Image (cartoon, rainbow, N blue to C red; front, side, top):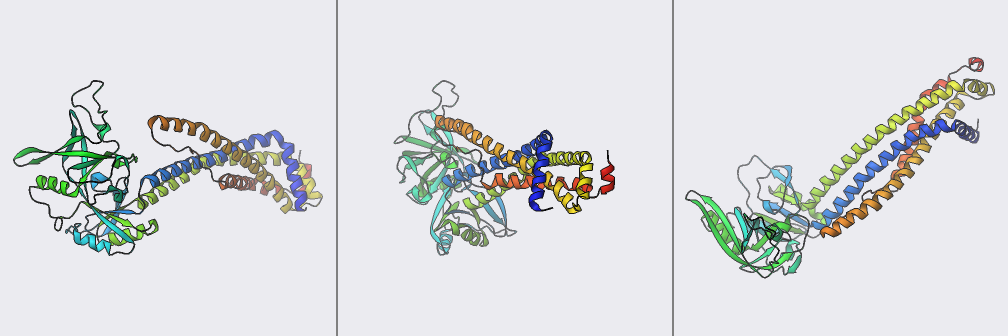
Length: 448
């Protein structure tokens, strides 16, 4: 039997079984559509998360903290930990008990590394800090910047300027929104005043053997940072000199960065492609590093795992559909036993019979796969249209931005679903086909 004759036989037999084929292929269609949609939903989440993260994060920056040298582990970062807003940490630890502090000599050491363009010191103030304006107050985290121009830290301004000087302060976008009148529940309990240009107080509290004491420092607000969607929205920046004065009061002795070091260093690299290499060199020296790229790699790895899990869930549905194909083909063989005997009597070989029934099973899988691909594309388009519009409206109402692509479906994904469904169909039809080819023609012709 030639290939063309075989294909004609397969098409005619599928047409002849009409309703049964449609019902069987519906299971395949649902299974393949489930795989495509679930994987595409995770892909959409991954694309949105990656886009938002790369927009907010500085991919040419490494935040370095004091360390001990040794092996690596993961932990969180951010201004509260002396880190860069929105970053995560690749941390190396060691059995060594000697802490490696971040001194001016270390800054010079890092500046000598290949691809490093700048190193900026940061001083986080450890203590209970409260920002006060008139009767409004809110807890905050103070950071002393090693540069006067905060644009060197990758920050942007919404109001005012990014230039710091002694006695001035720059607030994160959401700092004023977190300020309230304590023990007051009226409609004007929240601060609504624009703090740009206003005089504010920072109250720092420390506990010592002599009791609890508070230091009040006055600042003038010269800038409000642009909203970034990460922890920098709640950060408060002052000059390094002002930060040193506060830390000296907390510790009870003058700050000496040559011995005590800084809280963290921000290392700027010439290109994002070199960030991980530079970070590896620094961690090999024993320091803790935080890079946006390391976090991004872990996020992508997580989403890849989710795609495999969700794809596996959809594959279960397809497996159930495969059982339906096997059942349909088994029933077809019982009904067409005489036909099989006649074909063999007319010269059809066992290989022809095997190919015929495997081809029919693959055809059912193919039809279900095509239907599933079409269904998944239609549903994906509807979800993106309706869901994207809703998210855009919500983002506009809240003054933020939102991804309009909920379902990200690469062109090859529906094609893969069709091919996979066809293969599953062929495998499902293998046992019935082997059973059909093994029927002796004489017995098959006598079958009633």
